[in-house]
Image 1 (cartoon, rainbow, N blue to C red):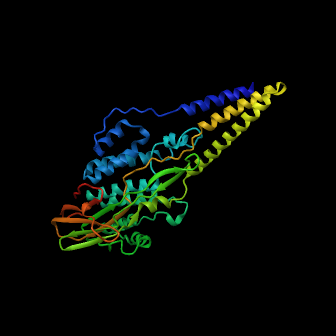
Image 2: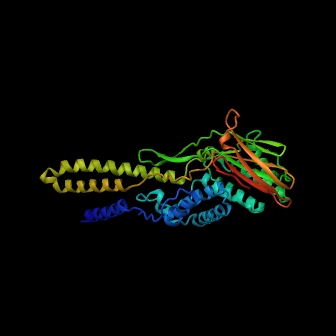
Length: 389
């Protein structure tokens, strides 16, 4: 009787786990506008994907110059991230054998969380708040600080550089942050730190990494590197021509993180799934043989029942890695600054290929107004249709 009670309980658990699903309740129509459609998914889509769509929609808004929209979305996303760390019930459930990792509230991998803080920092600086911008850049570095290989911990060039530049502009000593930036940067990619520079250009180009799963049960999270035809940029403003090289590569950042806690959890799930499947096959085969003998029929039926339960449990085990991605991120991040007289200026941003040839279809023009009391911040992406200060 005890055996059959255990079997009945296990069957109920396995059946519940195997039948659980997320219902789709799409109540909106796609318009083709990434910001409008993103807002619709945020409002009507699964709550677990809310932060993911806030990320995506904020970036679309930022590239279109809808800065208020981008700020609102990023603020909500960062508030959620800060509030669910260690408290997300679905994240805890995802560590169990019968719940998928993708059911947890999306926060993103470290490079994705870094970019949320990075973009919010740019927007703070646009609003004349370099102190809040610096806080965002520092928070972004913290997101990158927990690596298995400490050689790659907090190694974003721009985050330290911008920390140092903001500190210098706030009349502080940013030399330590600037030294850290120089230590991990490639020669010639960073401008000299000039606290008097009042026109700040944040550039990005290329397409960033995406995620995919490998392994027998898709339990291994991997990153597919993005590509970039653009390898550098050139800014023409007044009588100045400024060359801009890549400072940070998101492909590198995504692939140098080392393992995650969930990697070990999913590996254990995969082993459990294989073991229960193998045991189930063995029990079913042995049980069929034993049950064919009248003298051992009861034992054979028990083995058959055990084998069936093991197969059901194996089928219900979900070791698949979470491959939800903040698609649309760039591959390269760049920055430069110029000291300009107050007034109106026209900046032309040219993107160059590996041979140094101008990719004319990607050229952007920004009309900017340099104030005498605060920095003017310009954000330009090769994926933007238009750019504005």
